[in-house]
Each structure stands twice: as structure tokens, then as C-alpha cells.
Image (cartoon, rainbow, N blue to C red; front, side, top):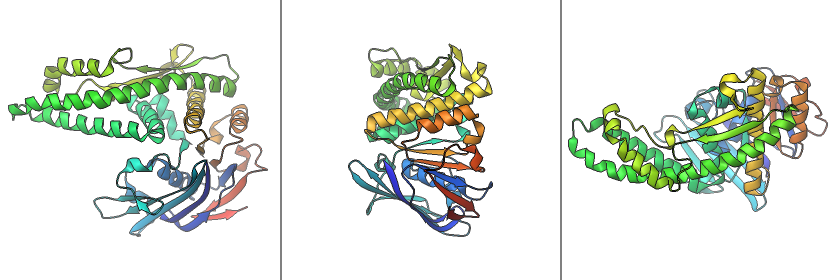
Length: 365
């Protein structure tokens, strides 16, 4: 996969810019708050339909402008794909997506047209944060590869919201209790699909991340991943989830929330058998996240039959020289977009494309 062009119009601090990236490393250099990360954010937006920095679409629109637009044209083995994301202020639906000339009716139609792996300083939350961060890591990976997965994830989320709403109102409207069977059925059906794909992906990622970790660190450390769920070893996940939802129903009514399901699952990330979140040093945690991202890259390439793009947002300065060199060697054949404040943060950039970024203006060097 290769991005052929990126066009920004009133996006963040860019009034209008068009980029024709190179096939290898594309480096965006500049001081802080000049607009480097905005380039990476725009590409990520066209991959997954959301920003990695904000949940508010309006924040991505240039100051005092009613609309913002990002268009990416990319080449894949099956031809050229064009994605446009249009952001608008003051509307109930603040985001419109076009695939070529066709308006997408659902965000799930976006997935697969531009696939990317993002690594930013915030990704340390995959290790340091709560289970939701680790579930999100898996969900964003799997959604890019399968619209069916995304459909079941959305369906599960909607059913969970409805079930919780019923739980909160049952004390005032006892007749609502009879609707819980319907929501349990929907949760179990879609939850089983989500859990099965997550379990399968975690096992494969564990194998890949272990090899990446050894390559990046040169240490005799074993990095392992394990999906933590009460359904993990069930012969029939759907049946077991149905049984657990029914068994916990009275407790759920008392607590006004659903206490069992894939929204409670987690991923254990361990180095030499010890939980990295608790026992890992800062360096080990950074290496573990980087290994996970490289494993994500390999997993997507294996499933798509071609490499996704790689987005590295201000992470090179966080790595020591050995890890930087190992990373650069690993991504030498992948189209990569890198932001940094100093070119010395990188190794060999001779075959890359360099852009100077200053106050929303790009200058190709």
C-alpha cells in the first residue's frame, strides 16, 4: 500500500496543502506546535475515521472556518482508492466520508481503503492504562481488516447501551424486565464473534511480538500476550455468554450495569512472565509497545497481502540509538510518515523525503 497524495483544506492549522509523498520514509521536521502531528492525524483519520488526539471533530477544523477536509489517494494491489473526510461545525452529524465519488452511509464502509499503523507517545497507555486501552488497540486493528468485525463490535456496543438503560429503569418500570432476553441474545451473538476474533488475533500477535521484541532489544526477554476473558476457553462462547448474562441478571439490576461480557475483557502483556504494566521499567514498557506496533504491522500485512502505511509521531527521540536503528531497519520497505523536532533523531534519511514544517506551511527540502 502506498499513499500517492494527501490534500488538506482548512484542517487544523493548514489553510491548504497538497503532499506527494515518497514511497519510503517521509520526514516532517519542525519545532513544537507547528503542524507536524497534524499530517499524521489526517492520515490516521482517513484510516479509521477518527482522530487519535481528540473526540471532538470541530477541533480539527481550522480556526473560524465552517468546514475542514482531508483527501487521501492511495495505491493498493487491487487499484487506486480515494478517501475524503469532510468535517463540519454546527451540525448534528459532524463528519461525512466519501469513498471515491460515493458518499459512505456508514463509517464501516471506510475500513480497508487505507490501512495504517500509528505509533505515538500516547500509545504507552496500552501498557500503563486500563483494559479499555488494550481492547481499543485490538478493536482498531481488527476493524481495519474486517468490516464484519466492526459490524459486530458496533452491534454489541449498541445492545450493551440498551441493556444498561433497561437496568436503570426496571425499578420504575418492572415490565421492562422481559426485554432483557432480547438484549442478552444480541450481546451473546455479537459478543461471541468479537471474542473469537480477539482471542485469535491475540495469539497470533503474541508470536509476532515476541520475535519483534527480541530483534528490537537484543535482550533474552520473552514478551507474551494473553487474552483475559471468562469466555476464552469456552467450547461455545455464545452459549457461555448467554448463561453468564442470565446468571448475573439480578446482580446487574442491583448495580444498574452489565457486569459480564467482552466489554470487561483485557489483554495481559508480560515480559518473562511478569505483568509489564506493574513490573516493567520505563524502557521495557516502551520496547513492549513498539514491539506490539511492529507485530500489528506484520499482522496487517499478512492479512491484507501488502504492507499498511506506518505513522510515527514524535517517537524517535524516545528511543535509544540501538532501538532507533533496529526500527529503521525493520521499516525500510514500508512507506512511513515520521515527525520529529531534530533530524539527528533519525539515522539514514538519504533516500527519504524531508519536509520543513513551520506554522502550517510545508517546504520540501
